[in-house]
Amino acid sequence: MRPLNYAILKYFTTVKEACADDVIEALKGQYGSFKALRKPAVIEAIMTGEANGLLEETRYDLDPKGELRVYYHAHKEGADTINTYIK
Amino acid sequence: MNEVSGAANAQVVAAKKKLSSSFFKKGITVAILSGMCYGLYSAFMTLGMAKGVWANNLYAGVTVGGTVLSSFVMIYMLGALGSALNDTISGIWCILIAAIKGKLGDFFRTIKTKPGAVMIVAALIGGPIASTAYVVSLQMAGSIIIPITALCPAIGAILGRILFKQELNARMMGGIAICFAASMMIASTSMTGDAPAGRALGMIIAFIAALGWGIEGCVAGYGTSMIDYEIGITIRQCTSGLTNLIILVPLWGILSGGGVGLAGELIGNVVTDMPSLIFFIISGFASVYAYSLWYKGNSMCGAALGMACNGAYSFWGPFFIWIVLGVFDGQKGMGLPPIAWAAAIVMVLGILVIAMNPMDLFRKKED
Picture 1 (cartoon, chains in turn purple, yellow):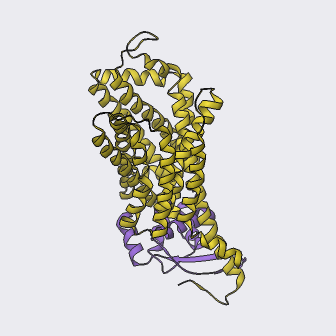
Picture 2 (picture 1 turned 90 degrees about the vertical axis):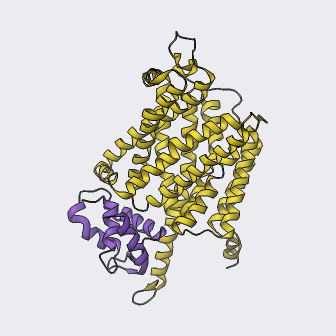
Picture 3 (picture 1 turned 120 degrees about the vertical axis):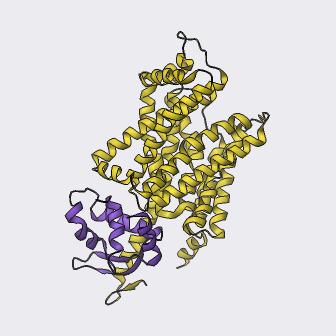
């Protein structure tokens, strides 16, 4: 089992793109009991990854509830870095 | 790449701008808070080192009120012991906080990984190595080295550019230079013209300290993009505290001629001395946030801006020493000179120049 932050970043190397809700949905099976698997914390972890060149924003829209939904992906350089450090 | 899916509308764009802006502002706030916590922890550690057994040179091997500690031990060993005690207590705080927040499992999982190992190395460079270099350089060259150590934000920014391709343009470098000038203004108040022999070597060693802190801020900041900042700081404080306690303090004991036995005796004296320990418990707690928010701030807004905001500790340190030791403890001569207040304003300007183009403020007003 990986630390939660690693799992969040690693998830982006396995999908075309994802938003925070997708990450939570994908990881809740293994990390559902983690206090840090909450939307604000996950958004912050993703945006920190983006600020450090690991992830890149692809698009944004509103979800059915009218909340902002930002999608990101791990571009080649970011995915390579993630895979180098996180096995 | 930033396309709005479906019909572009102002509501979505505004929400996105708000999200980006709040993340940026939070990064700056976190980095500034880290500098304030650094000042707080420095003040309480200084207060702790003036209380109880510390006030009597730890009664090392003699009766109350006497001392057998040479000036060598006084300078190096007590400094190392103060850092060791603060960082170890801070490490205990970190473990408690991680346990309460359900992150202890991730802490043990993280230290076995490559980013965890990088964080340990960064902690060793910025902790025992840089701190020892700072104490040694201060002893060899005097207070002239303080401005040299204030170079660490510039070093961190340059390393961030080289190692992690972080943004660093001419305007940001100009802002870092303004912040450095402000640190120089504050340092000038403690420049006593003391110039012992070996000053040149002392200044080189001071640069090693600045390099160490620059490396730590930049590498640990980047590491915090992968490692949760509360786990990162737990790794940092446990590494620094235990290294100081198990290696550095006994090493100074051996070098002073007292051997490991002296180190054990001094450690025993300080951990059982409640009048001073209470202040180390407070400084250890402040230290948790001084470093964890430093890492988090650097990871959120890059080493250049993060370290400049944190670098305001050169103001917050004297400020909280005045509040804690002067106002709270009633010690004389702790007030801040006017130049320190002026330097704080210069520092804010420097941070503003790094964070944004100041001309944009006027453009917004025109819009």
